[in-house]
Length: 257
Image (cartoon, rainbow, N blue to C red):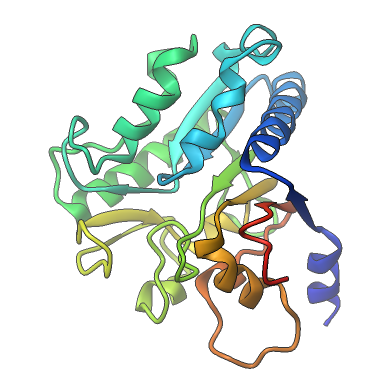
């Protein structure tokens, strides 16, 4: 019980009147963590996801943040990726590049996309090998508690079904607890082939922001945040980091709380 209580203490839920207000707050939160880790570690490891998250980062592209952030310290990863070419419309890399990365002065070598020439299994193994190398050279931290990579900030979205990354309700990968990066060939949401971080990696993070906007996700938010429900757990309910978890919700997403 003690662990659960501690986890509760490190969970914040912030509700904003509009998605615009959410984006303003998310930019400040991200910029403050960028400053903190750039000073403490000399690097800032940020994990992106797909979906509407990239749009919610748009305020970082405006003053004061665009000029204030030490973009050269950023190292960018993906919590999951579709096994498609980087210029394919389903690519999370393309979504992030078009909407965010192409508009900031980040070093191209600090953007870690998957090797899209490999199979799903090969791409997952390759990405895990890349992470091990980056831990050896202190670009990414290693969690002393779990032995898994400890990213500075993980920016997660959530699907209407409560999925995070490519970890879907009822899927066996929810229980994967050894691999850092794994693959899925039967995603219930197209495209079917993806790679994804596992929950031990997600939950070793120093900070996680769960960014959820829109009334279409209100049911899953309600299930995740209301106590005492005995129904099957949604994947998002497994998000419980070593560090701090903050939910960023707009009024639509919080409408059933």
